[in-house]
Image (tube, rainbow, N blue to C red; front, side):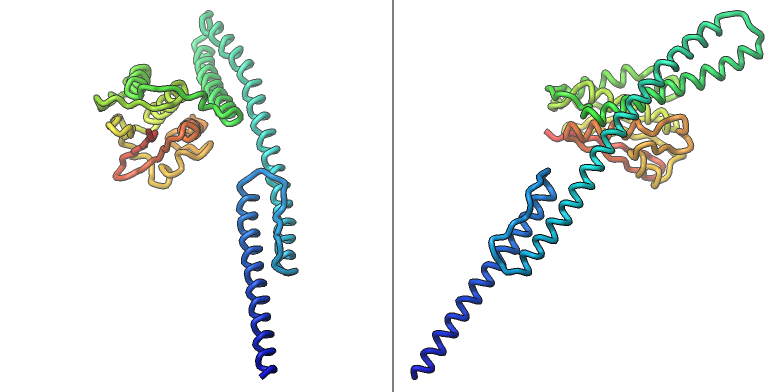
Length: 295
């Protein structure tokens, strides 16, 4: 009888010890999981610690900590390299703007002087290329500034209806000069959003410029009561794959080879910094760009 009682006590003790070990292992596993998630999302040099759980779990935590340290070093190296690259691009594009401006100025002076027709033709070609380079350099400079400084700016209360109408009006001459008469439908409901007005105007300008590049002669712009903005135009020269890549940096299609491919990338960056979404859809030769800023 005593033997049975002793055996029961031993079994009970073994069960309690096993339960305690399982509890500690589960607790340690949770500590490793929570710590791993925290270290991946937070910029911290602290390590994962476990309160128990046995040698193997502590060994696992140590192995994860070593890998996290390597990952953190690579991440810091990437961020440093990214900052240096952005600074270099900004400086280079800034340095190019000054001589290009001077070249355009001298070309303008030469165009107003007497010269043989053949020389005048060459000067026109040079001026066209110089103006193009100046525009592309300016676009590159603005993009690098936006990336390095978080270019969306401080938010303010913006009457989106008016901002869209003003952008269309300011770009109307460019559109009609390319044979595009926009069809505009703006809701009578007041769409008010907390945005940076200058950045929003930049987004609209880039979308209008995109229509000039890709439209086959039409453009429909709508602003609905829920704040969704749509730029839609026929673009037979595009394909579904090209439309999917329009927001990629430096991506251009053959019909827009005189562009840096940064216009829509700048628009996407600014929209996302202001808390909105922007997407492109291509269906039955119609390119549709949707823009939405939640209330």
